[in-house]
Image 1 (tube, one colour):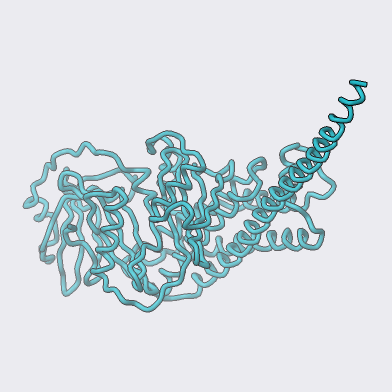
Image 2 (cartoon, rainbow, N blue to C red):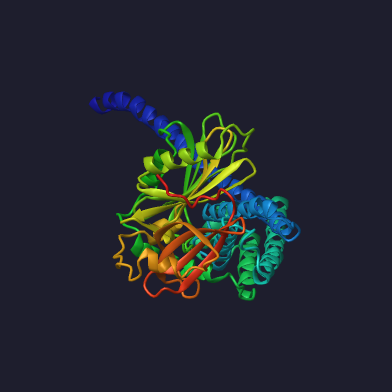
Length: 455
């Protein structure tokens, strides 16, 4: 009888427990499905963004081959730079880390570096060379190939309702599925990129590649987690947790650039802000705001001060403006650090200011991050008076200072006397080697270009 009474007591409890387990299992199943759906949607969005950005990249490269003025070329190449970085970020958000895709990522990285280097220089003084024009033509053709392959994958994925989650599973298990059209498409892209002939990226890009190979040694700090990357990205933008939607993804396994790709969309904003945050040290390497720029309300002096304050607030102290440019209602400033009165040109930082409200819409500290360190600077063997005598007597020298520059031939750093001068109404910068008196470089300046002393 005791057994019967116990059973009567325990049966309702067991029934409740069984129902509870069923409800819990159902909730668990739903939660798992929710996570999978969220991941699938994220992959779908990243892939469609990649297709869109490569489409636009091909268009902009085509435009660069048609335009014939520096005023138009600069914004086009800046757009190429933005789109290349955006495409890299998209690739980093796809489940491709278990397959070889490094050549394609390397190509996008080089396109970004190439277009950036050309865009920020003064094309009136140093127009596109025949070799650079040939490189642009090749990149335009290659972008078309990648665009076509991505569209094929996109069509197949939509027609056959293929899932990116299956791609991830197939790659993780290393087993061939019945239909791996997505994997096949990306492998085709990688194979095509591998077969492209080597391009002439220029001395600057080759030297940048070498710096990238040594980037881990050059970046201080402990390993940063995804959470720390998100926190640092928000802090860099002056936002607090909850102020924006944040997506953090690791760059692809083959990516040379050891960083997290972070996309921040502030509340109430339709466009996002893309950043790269190093996995070591958690430092922001570059940032791009996708928003459009309205009517100009700031002059260049006000914009420069905005850039100076921004850098100071982000730990870039003792910086001077070395170059100013403007395009499409944006002001572009290159700042360089000063050590013991010497301008350190290899450690430049680029800041883009929107002239409608003074907001920083782009930032690139790649060269600073890879190069910056305390230099052991030798005392110049030539006095400034001796260096001035090395300048053509027809040039009226109005100012001079010590500067560290990269040699044009070997990329090695050279201590120079930087002379500001004028000849027949034009301004020039003449760089005289401070150790042996050789003329290292002569640059023609635009009127008003920033070679004056920074503050």
